[in-house]
Length: 383
Image (cartoon, rainbow, N blue to C red; front, side, top):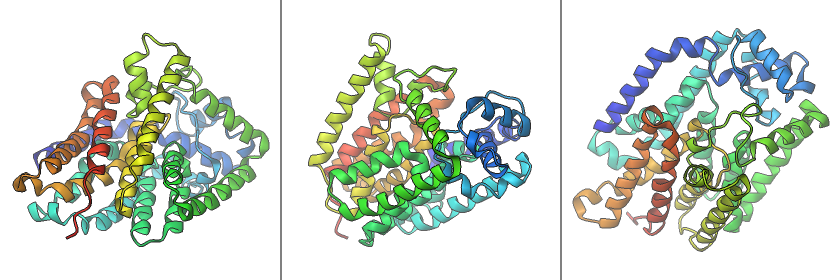
């Protein structure tokens, strides 16, 4: 309760101190807004041209460092309406939509967090509002809340044995392919064929829709942009990416060994660690659908090749569910349950490193991996 209250206070302070900065056009939302404006005004054939992106962003939002638009074009279809508004009005419209989605997520999760609610009825809400990546997504006007909503729908669908629909919901989240592709790969590893059928059906539709919006030439340009991003140490002038702030295996390998390994060495080391993780996953498929989803989401986060702070928002789902499931171990003496509670608590709090030691955010990968391993060893309670 104390940790949640403190982190909610951090969010409120961030709103007070930074709101004018983000409203002035210095948020991640500028890239989405400008890209949607380009599609609406007939400039889709130049969507992934960095020079054109910079010109449009500076013209309609305000002069600032260009933030490249790196998402599949199909996502822009939902942002076309807000591109008709001024930037400030569009920012508030997206913020309102994100808050509605967050309230819906809270309503869906609350019934699954009865043990936490029994301790204090506002703990579920405090977990959502206190998780710093969620606050970052709200402030930045990011689409990570939408992804979290889709992933929650996927988990609910799996619990109802609607695997195809679960795959469809994950496929709809391909605008964050750095997370949804490895998540789908985990289910492929576990031979969840109906899930993969749903995922691939939407993936094909998303690719075809994106190509129809931008054309073949821009699709090729998009893949070139992704190629530059996928370098072990991307050129900052092409894409500003601080790898040590990524909460995955790539970030941890780069931060710990980047000073002694070449770019190729970092890549190979990341591949080795990732393959070892995949081999462990192959042997550790959980029994229940809920546990499958929770483990797949944590595993996909670690396997992602690039990851931003707000992209970690969906991790609140396994954090909250595992806390609720094991919180009573604090009084029952269940040692394994206590370990899970402590790891989940550390994972909830560790994003504070962004404020005090941002280049050490890679440390998040360690409690995340430990929580995945610890939770995989405990079967879901029968009652």
